[in-house]
Amino acid sequence: MKRIRKPLILLFAIMLSGFSNAQAKGREHSGRYVWNVELDAGTTLSRTFIASVLTSHGYSLDTGLYLGLGTGLTINPYDSGNFVMPLFADVKYRFVNNSVCSPYLSMKIGSTFYMEDVTAGLLLKPAIGVDIKNYSLHLEYGLYTGVEVTGILQRNEFTKHSLTVGVSRWF
Image (cartoon, rainbow, N blue to C red; front, top):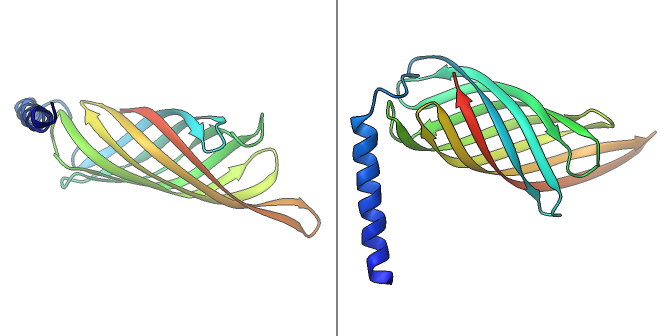
């Protein structure tokens, strides 16, 4: 069975590549302003639920590189009922540009602002995914670090981790 697995994976990759190149008219976002809406859901390392609605606006270059800025709203998994507003730079690289189907890598880096507390932090979210026409599917790791102000001269530093799956719609 192991001998068959690698050739099947290679055959599937070749077929997918041929399909995506034959259907290259599906996503014509290169060289212009684009934006997206993203829905994410997943878990933290402490096994609490996390969900986000994000939007990113930027410019898609002809090389397959996307550069943008984004914001949104995340349900804070660490404190029930607390919401987080991220502000981030969004960088994405598509390996097969101007194609219906392309794998990609992306990175969101920025700040998070907690709406219930006096808390701010750093956001770092690398992702791997696939673009299919005007949709993106991805698996994303989230690293949140910050300082929580709990009183006068009282501060708590924290580091949180999450793993989410998500879908985006590009316009």
